[in-house]
Length: 327
Image (cartoon, rainbow, N blue to C red; front, side, top):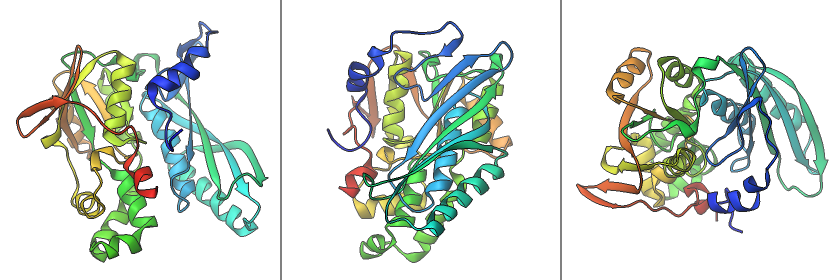
């Protein structure tokens, strides 16, 4: 099988359809496009999400904390704690383990999240550290949001822009390649500042409080992958306005130099939101210091893109542009 996420239909066929036992106190079950589970504890609801970091070795601890906690924010949940699994190669040094854990602990503390425990193991089967984080949080019943709530007529909004995390990873891990391709040091330095844009906690909690229909954080597969997963989860179609996508200057320069599509690039830090009358939410978020743009609409069926005034059928490679570059 190809590197990256297992495609949705195959995931459903070989994994999700095998899960037949479901409890009544689980409100949000495992499903296509759903990155968190939610359990009813007869008070606030418990939200749980897990994620690995595999596409980069630098700042993996920082990324792992934010990526897992972003999944909770996408259901309107406030993260409380994380559990960490570190699968480490035999060649790793004690200082490297200490550095990785320090990064995880400091990042978690910065967003008021406790490290609850986890597991560490040295393995001959891995060649570089694999960091997996499970985040747990709480959400008020009336503010619970899922990927499956999108409705025809909703506007589709995105926060911050496309390709946020991928731009940072490329600047952080592939600076020499970017320079060879003609990208300036100034652009690389500005792209490295995207590290501070990778959390969607603020906009996720604000949007849940505002009252939106659906949210999905934009991770592997970028905007294309997130839209497809949200569409699958909600059993709807969509229309994507390709000419309206907010692509930051650094993202555009870096992706053009590498010949990759920014809308297919991993983008933790971006949150996909569906809501009626999206302009009102855009204004609300702007007042709170969060930039958002309308990039499409939810439809009853069909998946299309509008490019330069022409409508075409939505299609993409089902592979994140970062993985494509690494190959």
